[in-house]
Length: 103
Length: 182
Image 1 (cartoon, each protein chain N blue to C red):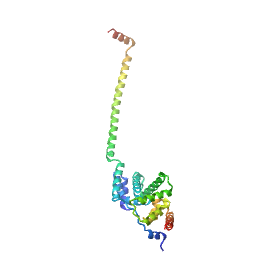
Image 2 (cartoon, rainbow over the protein chains, first blue to last red):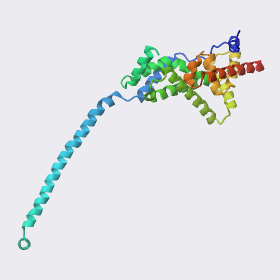
Image 3 (tube, chains in turn cyan, yellow):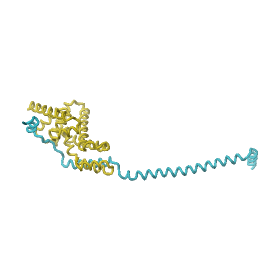
Image 4 (tube, each protein chain N blue to C red):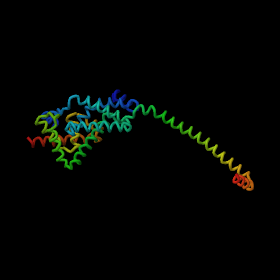
């Protein structure tokens, strides 16, 4: 016995009354390739990412070494001046300034 | 799941092979998804927009695809959601009721140069447009594509029993509409 669904299909058929432009699917696939290429992470970016990060860390490290060396020298210079001044008495300092002003 | 789909799934997980695998995926599924969408939105330009959105959403969500379902089922689900969202947006953008949207869709269908149906086929599309969106989805999948209820259950997340009932009611409504119109 024919079902209602079969009767409808017999009467109307089930062929879709739609079409698409010529070469639509080929062109659609190519367009999607383009859009995905824009969204996908670029290979060169990935290839250079790790070396670039390593170089940056290297520069930071070398800079830190130089800076700490410079700071050590600065600290030594300041400490040396303080030491020298502590070894000179007030009378010597007065004598030094008076002698300077006479020239 | 056939071997090709499994291999494709594996390639989609690898960052260096992903774009190429996705390109193959588009070529395999674009036609099936296009017709699935076209039957709902009717006009070619709208189907083209929704299909593009579907693949872009799929590309963005690839990391969320765990392989629990088949790729085709996953893509059907995305396409269905995109189609329903498109129709809802169309209704909101034009501040139209569902009946007015159906009228607008029918007018657009008549004007679409890629509609090549006769008077009877136009009547059938008109009858299908009277169905609620989800029922229309079920009717189209069964009537035009003859997709099994089990496949539809996976794609739409509705039980087989409910799908059968929905399709049966849809057929009855369409027949009644066609009888009244003739």
